[in-house]
Length: 148
Image (cartoon, rainbow, N blue to C red; front, side, top):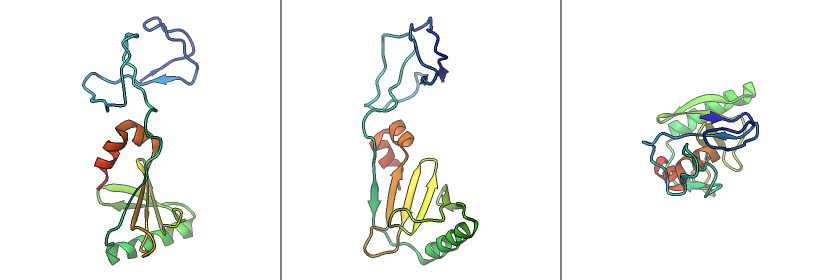
């Protein structure tokens, strides 16, 4: 990653502010179709924030009672402590919040996004909201492919 300090860079001639950061990806990185490279500069530039700005996934599934019981116990610990509590869900580590995720009883957060889980017959079982960084990094199709 290159971080510009506000001075012109002789290799590219780009003048940048203190907060501008340009990530340089190696040639071996496969870029989603919405990203492009600029041939105007010596270093390759990757567009980071283009395309889909938000994506919400939801679905219905049978949630095992053992999972619901475990989530209830972890959420109760989170409510008592007033802080999220670590929970392993499949291969992923989440933090179970002491509050709902909109109308979903269980709110699970991790670096890639937020998952809401509900046993209500009025809602779909899962609601998945990927973080913008994850969405922009993989693209919408990459995020959908990542979800189980």
